[in-house]
Length: 308
Picture 1 (cartoon, rainbow, N blue to C red):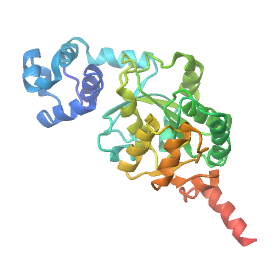
Picture 2 (picture 1 turned 180 degrees about the vertical axis):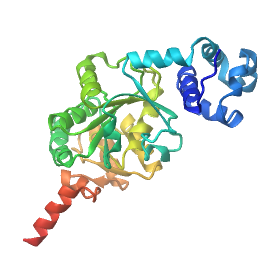
Picture 3 (picture 1 turned 120 degrees about the vertical axis):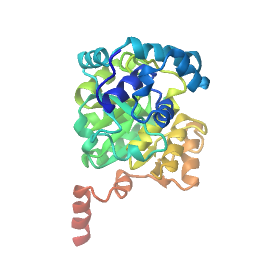
Picture 4 (picture 1 turned 90 degrees about the horizontal axis):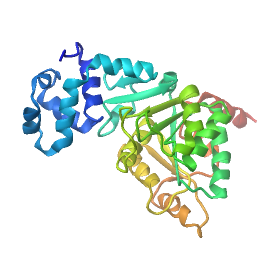
């Protein structure tokens, strides 16, 4: 097989054939920093160098020899999928700061959103109460006016509400998915998925052929928080994926915010506990904007108010 000419091409080729396993690619880079020697390894050599990877990795090494970079590139272009590698200028700078940044991002949509200065992650339950739905609408209104990019995971519930609120106000929003572009979970969100791809931006660290797996979602959450200066938890149970995102944000030195909820609602316990532990209590959209001092419109409004 012909070895791809550039390091970037080899990185994409390996990432695609090795199931998007950035952690494994990091191991590989320590052994083969230029990603050239590995193209000469037999399946047995791959297995002997990385014995803990098992049969799945052996199958991947076979794919590496059978699927050319040219074929992958053509397939991605036909699907309008772009790949942003960690070496590219377009790769989000904040995301590079996380412990294990994805080495490749598969994307569809408006890449200009990645160049915007301010990002807010919004997460919460898949089964929002009427209170949570009203809170998303009320809190995010002023934020969307300021052109802050709303980042969420395109799940049912709060994620969907956040994306829809942004788009209803012609504000930017990015969806981070836990599956490749050949798949969709849940399938009922197809209209939203297609609209986000055509008008906004969808990002995945997984090659197109990979379907959603349970363990993909916690990994997806680190990208949501990693893209953003702050993460807002709207409504979450004591144990939920939203709190995993909040933990990721804290580990990445991002601001964590939460909207308080009714004390008798179990779905509010996670957000309320975060506030008890030091997360910023959000009562209005302006409470969020105070954490984004470079948003000029809001600064101007504050100045006008103080002059009166």
